[in-house]
Length: 225
Image 1 (cartoon, rainbow, N blue to C red):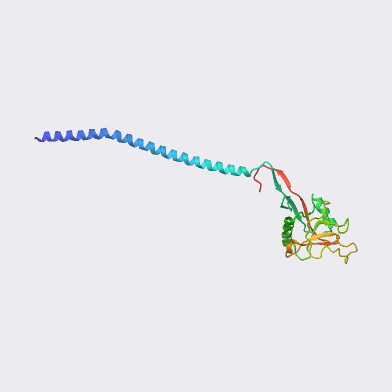
Image 2 (cartoon, helix red, strand yellow; image 1 turned 90 degrees about the horizontal axis):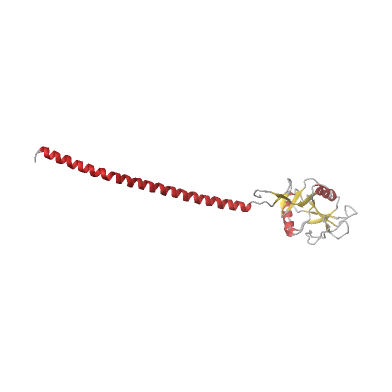
């Protein structure tokens, strides 16, 4: 075979290969584009699923918060008053007679404390441990037998039912005044055994006091704290 023939055949073979490559390339490009589209679609689907899950979590969180939201009442106490068990308490700093202490409580919209049960007595006993500076640093409560000796009455005119007298109290001691002891104070600096920390005293003695009044109820639209 002559050289020109060989060269012609070689050129023909290269042209055929080139033609085959030119026919395959668009198919490969199409497949690559298809794979790219599928990959992009998978990424979009994943991101949409992830955002959907996050949205569901946000909705759950909002539902949980909404359960704590209220258009109803929340318990509040004014500045200087402590909230406990649906009531507000104020522990005075200054010392006054029983009657003056009561007047001061009433001027603030309350009265000297009425202790309804052992749970309330326990709360007050615990608070006074931290507030008392010395053994005689006691607090007036709203209990007296000034109307009739031995008939102990709360300031709301209800009779005493559950008591927390110290051993030997009340004794109506007349060593300080002939009128005896008609008003009740409470408090033991180190805490009282079995919560018994009441004793009667002269109503004219100056003592600190515990005022009590109803909680403040407000209509609010935020989470109660």
